[in-house]
Image (cartoon, rainbow, N blue to C red):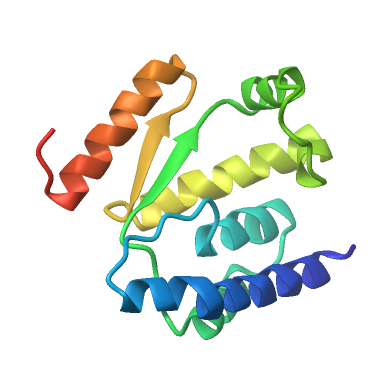
Length: 151
């Protein structure tokens, strides 16, 4: 699949998910947690595939009516370690992007790190190379802090 087609399919899917699930949940006062949103398009299709970041930003804005997450958790890990974990996890279904070369994954990681610099307060980097228990505790602490909840 060519990069522009991939981008447009993800944007269309994102719009459908937003309209059918996210907006009704937000209107009902619910907390919404997602595993991918607008930052993924910038990282994967922008940095990873080399598409124009401004065009991706425009498409994301168009598809979401400008809605952005209040908080994005970016679980950072060296690419080689992340791919080794994927390969070792036989319970996890491998997807098309998992099978891409090391170069793409390094570009995607750089994309997320670039977004972190650009959108600092909205994106929190969590060191995913730490033991799982520590990653969970750090994640909970960030969420409790951002939501104004006591531990």
